[in-house]
Length: 185
Image (cartoon, rainbow, N blue to C red; front, side):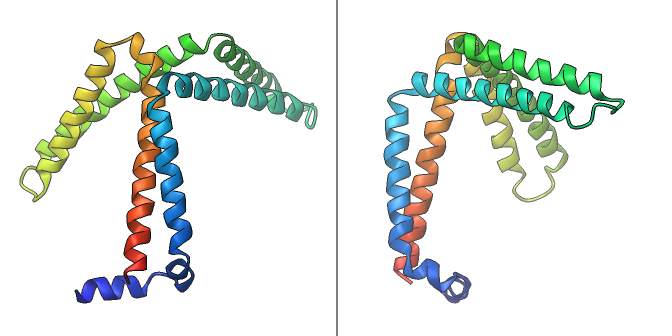
């Protein structure tokens, strides 16, 4: 009980007074996450298209930057990178389904590699308390990566949107529980 009192004393007074705003933000995020769970394909395609737009903007900005220092020795490489950004962004915008499929495959393989690394870390730390959590995290990452690959290429349509919706739901509930804890203190 004493630890909780000390921890809550560290919470800024403004945050304690404005717990309702944090609660409303949490409720909004939960609602958005719930809506997102019902439209994971749309969120996936929209987020991938947004990525394409960002790539094009970044490429154009780099091309503009070239006009500011024409005597720079790295100018040709800078221009090539800018054009690659624009080209990649254009491809993503042109075919967001293909882009989401490729990105999803990359996510799956990254999860598998991270899972293997966590397993190796867990086994090297098996003499330390809590190493089982690392083992569980590693196995979870591997299983998620395999599930995504088993359903690939169709998983490319829903994985990214699902991850975004889950993130919104987790954030929302976190804010709600934080607000309730602040109200009660």
